[in-house]
Length: 493
Ligand code: UN1
Image 1 (tube, rainbow, N blue to C red):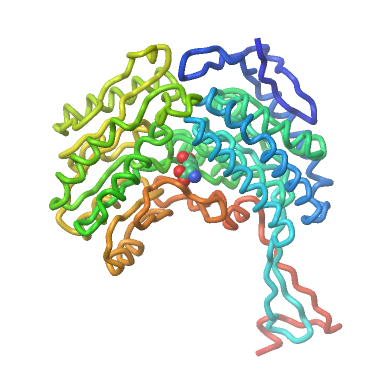
Image 2 (cartoon, protein in one colour):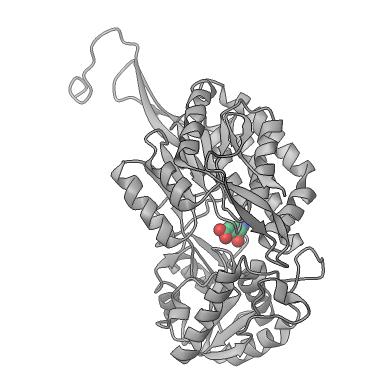
């Protein structure tokens, strides 16, 4: 049986726990291998290795660090198809989307390699004569990364690449469901020639490995993407230790369709946003807010088009929607559908587990649309993380904005309208970290900040130049070349 191991101090190793967990393909239950379940001691070994490696890495000029990242980018590009295949087998997303996800990691690697020649600081005039003032970015030390299964390589790239280019070492806990992708990514780091101990992979559960990382005094920051519940726990624990955290914790994203919208375009965006990746994106379209005058038209087009979404094994190029990650997720989604029905929402299409044509071996849920949903229903407020979306009807843009903003999350939102004035009004008023105009709620590009407001996160951003703020501290430097004591705020006034 294939074993997925840890990578600590440049070596692949098992854990003293000697425990393993089986990894299966969510499309058909095929056993892919087993992944080691590590202990707090493994985390500590990884941290010790990272500490030693980081001491020299911080002194390597950033453009030289970037050369390693260019190699990583080339290797990711070379292995795009192989990585995409592993990804689809492990987490179920259809192969086209898996390729797209690997592309995000490639883009991020080139982009962050470019940062090696920027990593801009600021020079500012000093208030005193013959004095020079500047602020520069310095690495924090050891970055602890905890990443989810739904974007196992893209999100790992969003976090590890800026951490490395800015001079940190990495201890990474990937999701238990996707150890193969993590292993390949680390192999690429290894092959790119990164110094040993700089990137360490520690597999295992959140409750053991994740907790040990948060508790470890030498891990300087935790960057986490995952559930709200876990994010809050990390925030509480790490906050007590004055440890920096960057938390990204999901959404309840809405598409708003105004009465002047191009309805076919909106339908394309909604189907892709709600059912792509089987709705298992933080950015998934889980609400559709529609002007009452176009509600019926939109509904009938959505129902008509839903039959295009062929369900099945994502390795089959004709399949449009893959399985959900595991059995308990399937049951949770089904539970939400029952809650929706009990709350009085009307099931327009879907609403059941799919078992026909051999799909019973995997975890398949029918693309599901509720209508006549009220903003205070649970299905309209809570993140379902599955192929379920809810239509809510409104009478105006103002009401749409109010409904959009009424949930605890604030990751992504979208508006379909032909009216430029109302588009700008929406861009201003939609309270989310990402806003799309005439495009669906998914599809963020890596050179823009990714993250959200309110319960989605704690103000930090993955991706884009903003991600450097997670992995660096600002150091302000003053050089006085006057040759005499100059007292700031006193001698110049
Ligand atoms: C996520 O679901 O956590 O914008 C990431 C998107 C993708 C990333 C999603 N580029 O949907």
